[in-house]
Length: 609
Image (cartoon, rainbow, N blue to C red; front, side, top):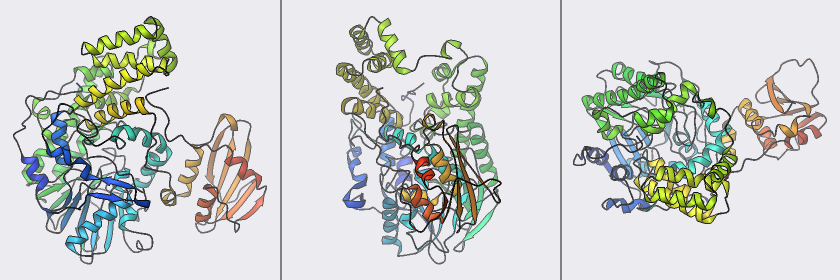
C-alpha cells in the first residue's frame, strides 16, 4: 500500500520533537551556505514555512517528519560528542579527542561541511581535525571531505572506512553516476520551490546540497567486527554491516563515552531496499540480522545511539526497543514478500496486498518517509527473481514509445485517450489516469494539453504522498512536463572525485563510456607505465570493448606506451596531455581511443520520450 492509514498515528506524542531539540547549542544564522561565485548550495531557512499548520497540499505525516528534519544547528549528543544537523541531507558528528576533533561523515559538499565545522568551532573552539570516519559508501557521507580537511592538511590524519568503501563509492557515484545523479533531481526535489505545495523534504533529511563533491581515500580499513582503533585518544569498537543500507557500512561504539553510532542502518523512517534514484538492491534479510547482532554485540555498553541522519535516541532500553522494531521491519518485509512470491504473486501484486503489523505501522520511525512499503516489496522481489514476472507476455514488450503509440491507437486515438484519462482523474482514479496520460505523452510528445493534464495528476499525487521521494518525483515530473528538463547541479565526475580513484577505477570509468558500435572495427593497444606507482597497465580496445590489466613483462609490444605519473594520467584523461610525458610508438592511438569516449547527457529526458 503506497499510502498507509494515518488515523491511528499518535500525533499527540511529542517525544521525537523533544529528542530533536535536546542538546541544542546554536544555529548557523542565516542558515544559508554559498559556494563559488556566491551560488547558494544550501538554504535551510527556505523551510521556515514548516512552522505553520499542515496545508491541504501535504500529507500530515510527511509534514511532521519535515518539521523534525528541518531543525538546524549544533547539538550535544553526550559528553564530548556533538552533531551538526540541518546543513545537508545528512548529519556531521564530531567527537572531541585529546588534541582535536574526529569528524564522522562530512556531508555531501565541501562547502556545507566547512560551514558545519565552522559552526562547531564557533561554540567549541578552533580544534584541528585529527581523524575522519566514513560510516559507509554513499556520497552524502564523504562528499564534503575537503571541507574539513583541505588539501595540505590531511597528512598524518587517519581516515577510517569499512572494507570495500572505495570500490563501492566509485561503482555508485562514478560508473553509474550520471544516471543516478539525474534521477536524484527527481528523488530529492532540489530544483523544486521550497513551499507548502512544493518541496517539503525528502524524509531522510530535507534535500541534497549542490556544492563540490570531494573524496579523500581511506587510510585505515575496518575489516572485521570487533576491530578496535584509537584515534586521537578516542577508543572505537567496530561492527561491520556489509550489504545493509550500503554494500560497505559499519556501526561503531565509543565505549568510554557510552555512545553508539548506527551509521544509516537505523534511522527514524523506513529506509530503501532499492532507492528510487537507482542503486544495487539491498539485502533486507542481512540488514535485519545485523540490527539483531548490534543489540547483542554492544550489550549494555551505551546510553545513547545516534545515526548519520535524524536525531539520537537516549536510554539503552529505548534504543533496544527502537532497534528491535527496525529489525522486525526489514525481516517482515523480506519474509512476507518471499512467502507471497512463492505463492506466485508478482511484485506489484505483493505491494498491493502486503501490510505491516499494527505495532510497526503505527510507529513513527517505521513509516515510509524515504523508503516505502510499496517500492521496497518490489525491490525484494527484484533481488530474488529479477525484472521478469514469469508471464511471457511481458518478456518481449515494445519499448515505451512504441508501446505508448499502440495503446493510444487502441484507445481510439489521442483525443479519446485524453478524454478517458480526464474521466479517470475526475473519478479519483489518479493512478490509471497517470498511466493513460503517460502513454499519450510518449505517443505524441508535442501535445501540450496532454502534458498539462498529466502534470496536474502528478501534482495531486505528490501533494498526497507520505513518502518524501515519491512527492518529489511527482512534483519534479510535473515541473519538467511544464518547463523542460533540468540537469543536476551536483557533479560526481569532477577532478576532486577523479583524483581519489585508483588507476583501475579511472580506466573502468573510461571503459563504461566507450561508444561500442563505433569502435567495433577498432583494434589498438596502449600501455601506461606509472612511475610514481611502479605499475604497468595494458589497455586493449577490441570488438568495441576497452579492457585493461596489470602487466610486468609484456609478451608483445603495445602500439603506444606512455610513461607518466598518476597526476599526469589525470590530466591526459581530462584532455590535457602534459609535454613532459614520455611516449613510445604511435601517439595517434591516444586520440583514436578518446574519439570513442562519449559524454553522458546530464539532463536526459525521463517523463518525456
